[in-house]
Length: 88
Image 1 (cartoon, rainbow, N blue to C red):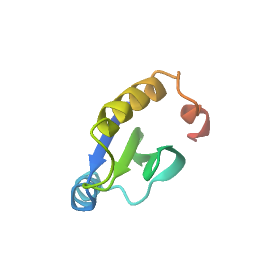
Image 2 (spheres, rainbow, N blue to C red):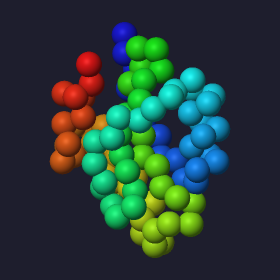
Image 3 (cartoon, rainbow, N blue to C red):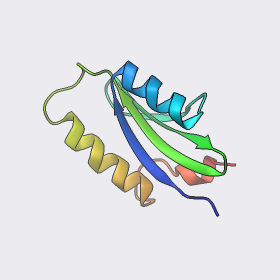
């Protein structure tokens, strides 16, 4: 079975370390939910991982809260992008 999960990664070094640990090599981009913040998905074996990345010093105080709400809605199929339809 596929196990879907979501990650929000803040900072390039953090994203690089997490992707290295997962053995992931790319993100298939879906959209830019907030200015300068991208969302997409990657795979680890048969697992589909929804991921958003942002620069560590980017965004105002509300950016992470807004991003959490966005990722939750997207993972529940309520977001603006039907990401699971794009996963093959």
